[in-house]
Length: 326
Image (tube, rainbow, N blue to C red; front, side, top):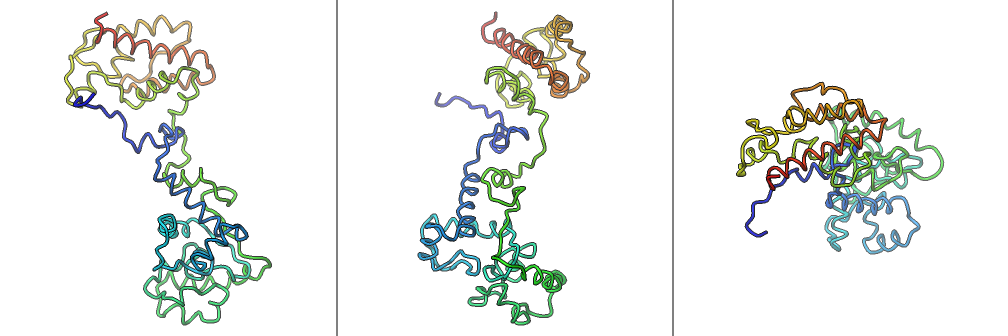
């Protein structure tokens, strides 16, 4: 309703994380769009016989192909401008394995760990910028100014090893660093852009519980300590009635409501024998207490469902006491 105070329970960047690392798996559209645009650049590098490659290289004079860096003064469409903006990110993420070196830009492609352009931006001017790896070998002293720093010297010293690689047959190959097999995938690229990593969250177990979605969402908020208990309302400066509505304790937080409240402890005592429920081992953290119990039940789906439903029932009973006085 207009003018009514809104409560934002979770930060947007948190819920946009994958479920496996503690989020809700909601796509962040900007990152998803970048991953999709990077796929088009990948097609320009890898599918040179496609109509997309032929049309783009004709329209922009080969502006994004191996040996031809972007035509920096060529604006083009909004779509093309977005591709140009993402090209440095693409160059850092794509590694070129040399064979002959005829299709690899000496400055702009990543054949040595990162593109050389990032080390020598001030020394790269057209047409020098358009030189390939193969043609650069005959003019190396002119390409890299001396004296140079240690990193540049390391690059120069490593060139013979790349020349040995370049001596093989076939064309140059490109490999994507954000996938295990070197091919481009939007999903793995999105994960890399979101910096989510592959570490599994202990919260991941709740998405496997066979309960309705509203109970799963409730458990997700509970494990993140975002349930609107009286203590959470106080933190947000929202008017509230102090005290636990079930036992009249002075303050109601998630630890008290779901673990320590005498009313709720009676419920756990009733369920202890049927669920083989152990005593909550952590009296200082609701999250740890509930996660430890869920971990014990991870190989017993039925007990996990009963436990989750019991937590939900406590929350429903609490809300009935607060809002319906029943």
